[in-house]
Amino acid sequence: MNGIGKHLAEGLDVRRETSVEAVEYICGRWKVRCGAGSVFQAAALVLTAPVPQSLALLEAGAVELPGEALGKLRAIRYRRCIAALAILKGPSALVANGGSIKLAGEPVQWIADNQRKGISPSAPAVTIQSTPAFAEEHWEVADSERIPKLLAAAEPYLGARVVSFEGHRWGFSEPVGSYGREAYFDRERGLALAGDGLAGGRIEGAALSGLTAAEHIKSSFGLT
Image 1 (cartoon, rainbow, N blue to C red):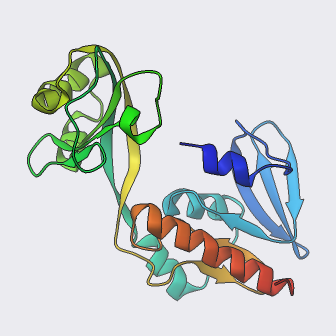
Image 2 (image 1 turned 180 degrees about the horizontal axis):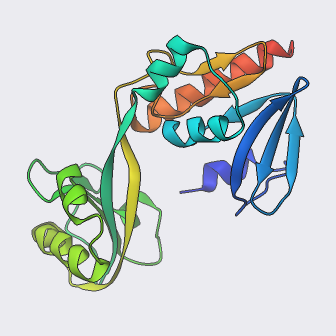
């Protein structure tokens, strides 16, 4: 899943597992303050976290955005999802549509065969995503109780026994609404906000948003 990111990051100084507490704009420079006390500086800043988290970082650093843009960004909300990764005894029964299926009822909305997608070539595994309603109702419920419910609902589509599973709470799984443009950009300060929340969701929206933000940054520095 992270293969594209690893490829794009080759040769770059990437800091992982670093908690950012605030971003500040001081004397024409961006300062990114991290939980460990470290500070990074740059002439431009791109935030691609879910919009509420990006706005929180700006607010923590006393960075103000224009009122109209801020109102549109604050209006973006996200639906929650409970996801389960299940290892199967054998290959799944998901043979159509590239190994994935979207369901219309409760509590499961999507199932995908990770082995058919090439994500887990050495093991038969599926990813199961809940509906937003199920996630809201079971958000604080232990995995030992909520994940078996998803597995039971998905059983007719699996075609093999579940050997093991793990769950994940996805708080920003599906954006509701959009910014109206593919990215927010402040040319004067070199600030861009990008992500699926601005471009209407889906991986395609996230990619277009990131590319748009990159073009804005390149243009502001006179790059082609």
